[in-house]
Amino acid sequence: MLISIVNPNDRPVVLDAKGIVKTFGQVKALNGVDLAVTRQELVFVIGPSGSGKSTLLRCCNRLEEPTAGAVYVDGIDILNRGININAVRRHIGMVFQSFNLYPHMTALGNVTLALRRVLKLSTRDANSRGMEALDGVGLTDKAGAYPGELSGGQQQRVAIARALSLEPKIMLFDEPTSALDPELVGSVLEVMRRMRNTGMTMVVVSHEMRFAREAADRVIFMDEGHIVEEGTPSDIFEAPQHQRTRTFLSAVTQK
Image (cartoon, rainbow, N blue to C red; front, side, top):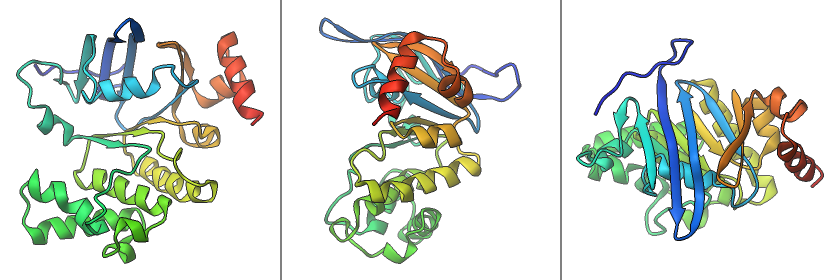
């Protein structure tokens, strides 16, 4: 099913999740969550562990099947029974906290694998696009290196290049810096900042509050499977309206 979705400012909605419910046994991880993300918007999702942030992201590309609700990506109903979800996922880049690189393949090999196997590009065309993606994350000089020869930050940047090489319409980041040593976080955030500046549509789940303040268009605070509050970074960080938001931000900013 294809529908046309626009927001009041006439910027097309790339991701539109409506009434998402997700249960695991007796536990309701998501309880009727609505999330609409417009083209070129960076939405930052914050909240305590177990609040449903990562589950929401995974429902948005069907790594988790929602128990109820609807998800549209670029107007396509991705929960439609007849949908080719693998084809849809080409347009949804996903970066996890673990890098998920193949250790026996070079950086370029990891980036080009899906280009060759999924998009059926020739080796020459795949390598050309792969090098372009590695250039975008500042790693052309590491194209021939294996994951074990790269730092954690470099491995995550390869993972980002792998997702970008498929030219997605939206990028989903699930705690992309949480597995990194503190001194390596900056290089990954810089890549994400450049992506934001070039107009990539992004949803980021992270505890990097400074990055949220600097780069986000909108910040969403989740708790217990609900969106408690959302607004601009100044709304959320400087004048939160909900006591739960204030308590959370007070705790994380004291660390």
